[in-house]
Image (cartoon, rainbow, N blue to C red):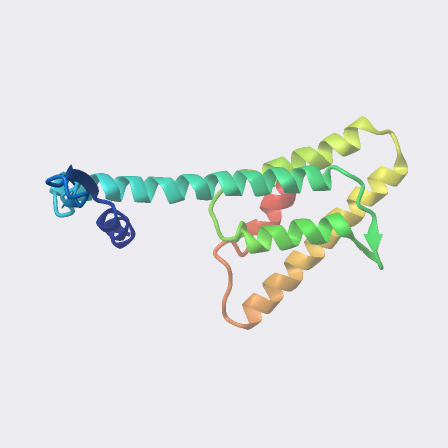
Length: 168
């Protein structure tokens, strides 16, 4: 981590131009502006380096979740016999490893989005659409659990992943 900052600071130095003796030549006095081995700098840079990537990672995760929620709030329809929203939800959660963490807000947000879509419309087509999405997600989760169980790589949330997604 500090290697990157040390490389950055080693390239940065303060130059002071000094006029020569009237011959038109300039002398350059280069002085480093930062002591790279200072304990206070090394502590400060490790905090900055650790906080910044974590913050940007959290911001990126929030942006991705927002995009997913906006996407599934629309009626995406079907591709073949599969509801597109279910496939997108499953792939995103799998990619984000949401099934492996103890608690994540993305499940609550997905359920709220589905609940809002069902509550606001008194339409059997909408209910059928979301029922097919829910059952497809359940089927995909069951297939994942069977495959990971057969391979001896059961996820940490073996029994609670499907209950978490649909039980809240």
